[in-house]
Length: 438
Image (cartoon, rainbow, N blue to C red; front, side, top):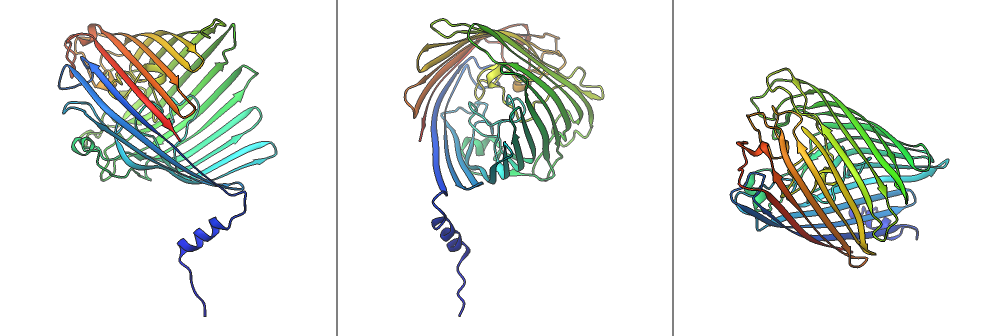
């Protein structure tokens, strides 16, 4: 007589009887953040705005020899927001399995190989194009394959995956923190290759190519982007009493539509680019000071009525480390922007770190929007304003971190008669948050 055991029983038996080198690891963190905005720049219903958000992350990692399985559940919600608070899928994504993949991590001939299959999130390079979010309340994830080869002087990273689209998207569902699982559309694919080369002890050169093919789906409207993005990034590590720098540039070609509207069926030729430079000096004073000079340039669309589209697209990258806090603030992005700035980073205590920053913002094209807030000035004004920013981080213990920061923004000519915003005084933003890891 033959008795068949259920698959779940067989799997449980395998895990429980696995050799001693098999390992389970459970971890996570919980973050609570409060945000306040006075005279909001983003479209809102009043002279001030506020919101309370939380983010809970739970991770499970199983390892046996070279094989591993990783799962991550993230719950991102927001409360205390008003009817006009600008909320979206970057704020809210309740009970979402952002990672669930198998992988193989092994060494061969001095090289370290890492292969992931399934749903994953990943940082590549400086995180300007493909990234795992830190400040933002929700996560980028992809379903497909990621392969990494680390060699003594080179690091190859390859991705071929469908971006996971976050749901829900309608205002009522988001405001109610409703649960609706994200999903990939396998006709939409992101693919690319990123190479990091070590030039010497201080310097590295990154080169990359990313392709994105997307089209409208039955329940998903897109801009039908068919993009090819090429780029380079050169860095020199900061050392005591010495200069460091970063220079990055990217060129983008392909086809895209100006909007995701169903009535927009015109494919435009994409020609856009982005430049970043920063250099500074690392002091050896009691504050471990670093003074940075920064400059960012990203093209905007020159003419909405021609057959070209010139606004740069940073794909699935982050912007917080270049342009300030996102979520309720999030005024600036890597598109249609000209922005020099200066930043002072310092450590007032062993477990304290802080910075003070100042940036000036212009538009590259007065015919295009200030994209994150979709504001447009029809009088050709390009001077947006001055942003002063600060942040303080305190590592209270190995498990508990506290952070606060703020922005004061002086509005300039762009806000005179700009659409979707009111020129009712300068704007300020403040947040405070606490994170517990376990």
